[in-house]
Length: 396
Image (cartoon, rainbow, N blue to C red; front, top):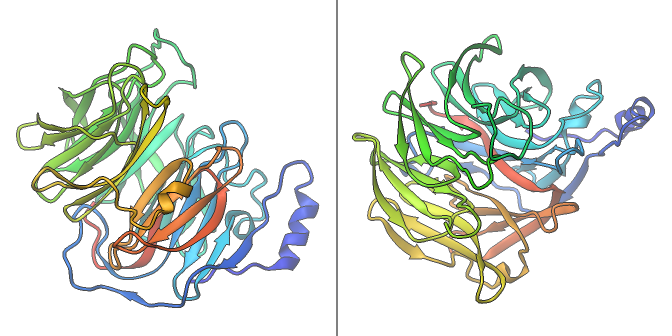
């Protein structure tokens, strides 16, 4: 697929959107034409298994309250990177994508973008980015899929920092055929990422609005009954959760920003017990096979500055393979790493830089051995990437 920029359409858009800020698509050639096909290597079983990949979408979060979430697309078949494709694909949507893009995924023939402060999941055609509809979920955060349903975490209440926050969050079960919420399950406060494995849904409760009184547990939901089963104590202010090939969950926490640091935790899904802690800060990560690619930022009171780590953890053996997967010095130019993914077929590493959070960011592409191939300007706060290609099967 190639996203085409039609300038006559853009002129028409400028006439009908006088009351809001308009973000025009731009095309920049950053790579060479290439066909990316399956190498036959085993992939992560809880993600789509690709026969080929033709491109990827990148969701830029945008600043809270600014209505500046945007969608970019990189086309492997042309080497073209197109910024802000949503408005051009959807000229009749006056406010474009909305306020704060928090997650992005493809399931079936549709592209799903979780737009946090606009209280919706935007649903688009995966090849054209044209709007199909939306799922209304307040303060929504992350999305996963299983057998025709989408599961979306929701903070449920408004954006409000208070150690006496009263509103627990929930997971919404959505029929992907009708885009209707068919059930909800209450979990902890401010639930963030979720994962589905072994007939259970695991939810990272953050308590992120309850400063100094953070949540510390994973909620476990029985997938068949969609009922809350138990909580697993882990650490304050949980954030990410991802299953590996060995029946383990890899969970991260933000910590309390003072005495309790960010760390990486391992949960055995057979016993639902915490089995290991790896002493490494984790802000974001991506799991490819047995390699967990991590970027982590930690404040140092010795240097009075943030220390940034670009690490790879072997999840089978629970060992840190490297604390610097960028090998050519490009890490010295990155100001605020904010998103990471790995092409499951080529193993190229994609890392985003949010810079100062108010101006356009940068997407970097690195070879598997950590050398920069190219970089390109993105929208504001680039964060979430999902690949577009021919899929063998969808496991979740």
